[in-house]
Image (cartoon, rainbow over all chains, first blue to last red; front, side, top):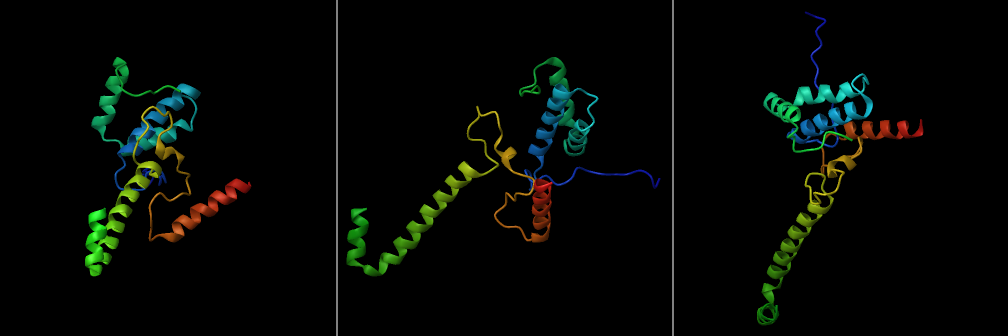
Length: 79
Length: 85
């Protein structure tokens, strides 16, 4: 039990307030842009994934994943 | 405007009212304009590829005032040492 590390993402100066919605969206976009630019094996991309997994409401993530699969996502996920 | 000047000429005691009231209104509108142009929160130009909050550097404080000065001083220090290195 003692070796389970529960963490969240660190402070981001771009989003200093309580409302982290933009932070969630930005890290989701940055993760997929990072994957697109450097490939899935590039480990620094996982920092963005950790951020969006911690911050984003699961409903948003599932909605965006569905839209991404259909190709109807309203924003650009490629560099 | 001419009506205001006429009114103040006949009742000079009203001058501070117009000064402070006018100053407050102008200051309020100027602050709103400043936030729209320089604030990191609002997207004015939708076609620009860079979002306005991405220009904030890791050591930059976007708030007007923050009580936690050591935190920001530390971040600023870290940014300076990173720049030198």
